[in-house]
Structures are given as C-alpha cells and as structure tokens.
Amino acid sequence: MGGANGSKFHTGSFKGSGAAKLLEVPLAGSVLSGSDLNTKIDQWVEYGCLEADAAAAIKAVNSTCPCVSDLSKLSSSETPCR
Image (cartoon, rainbow, N blue to C red):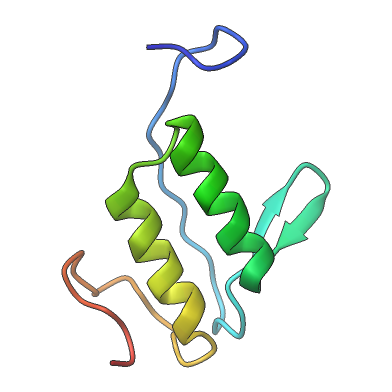
C-alpha cells in the first residue's frame, strides 16, 4: 500500500521531553490542537491513513489534556485521567 504521492507508509515513534500542557500536533507549518485536531483525525480515518482505534486513543488523550504528563507507561487499553 502506498501513500497519496506513491510513497510507502512507515511506522515510527517519537519521545519528547518536559511536561505536557496541551496535546499539539505540528502539521504543514501549523499546530493542531483541540477540536481542530479532532477534525483532522476524523479526516485521516476517512482517508484510510489512520485506523479508528488509534484515532480513538488520540482523541481520548486530546480530551483529557492537560492532566496527561507522561504516557510512556500507559498501556493501549487505558484511558488517562479517567
């Protein structure tokens, strides 16, 4: 399966530093957060480049920030702050 421009999809991870205050995702020169991020997540699911369960997990974190400060030990079945 390839991306819209013919490139292959890749899986990756990233690790930040510092305490989270707001879930923000940099994209194409802007920074998405809150309802704007949720809208983009829905578009990615519709396009097929993000699975629904991954979208739900990101939205769960988005709705609970800023109380989330460290997700490194959180299992995929847990929802932070609830």
